[in-house]
Length: 431
Image (cartoon, rainbow, N blue to C red):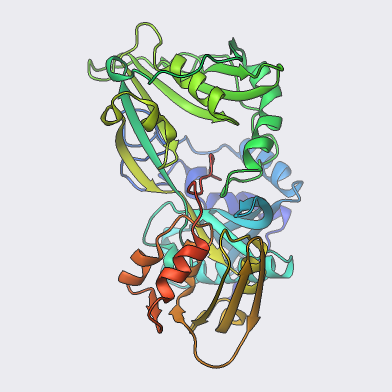
């Protein structure tokens, strides 16, 4: 049996896609209620299998995209496994954009599983990313038990929440000096790029958009759900500082009747944020507002006269992070407090250059990472360091779980102070 792990050529791309669940109309996510889905069902239905024409269109588009880096597992000349990395920038603490390799579209044909092909593809992608100078890899895990063995660990989270309209009273606030408008898809498409740039500049964990990110927005209906609708907020100077997409789906059940689902929502300031939620929470002939894929620390809860009216109905991890280059990654972010800590990584088979004892010295935004010898303050595994990287994970929890072993009395507390960010990191879309 001859095994190759390499970039597929054009003639192999149809086979490449057929190794992926979504191209075959198979489930591509855990069969459990998803925090990124607003409907009453646990998850959206699988798409139908791709046609031969669609596979050709995908191949032409993907291979023309410089951000697309595919890898295939080929056994005796047949593609039996596929994955890819997408080139992103992710905003890290300090507001800096850092190159990030997003792992996506991963699968191995069922009859070729348990042979180490996924690990070999992942290793090839890690090596290629390091050659491109990319210090981080990230993914959205379709199944929670798969990716930890490759060094990935949750770094951002998302929630799905609901509010009954009858309980959605907001606390008094100053009048909004801006304006709201119900817009069409073309207006939303035109406004999104600049708004997303402004949001991404200040939100840790946010990603650069892929090409054509908003091209699919439309005013057409979707089955019985009706069209997606668009709300835009402008500041007093006329600049767009908030956009929301919402849908009023038809329901088969009395319990779900009158639901308004907010499928996207971004605002660059508190006034726009409050004004848009005030309208969305008070549409006529609605009973419940549902918002999926939202941050865990949603400010809206604290704008309500009754914070208990804000009910989290689902929660899950979102981005899983994997540090590929410890020095470049840790020097690439800022730290809110000065500090000096020494840590040891004892094992990292896939990125062996990370193994050793490192000293991290921070002075506000500046950081220096260097190899050292001698005793360390703590031992940490690469999964824990990757989870901590964006600042949204508890060092205390990771230590209690055995991923961090303190060697000095205050090591965990010091690590927590240095890495923590407020607000928590969040990204508004997956890949």
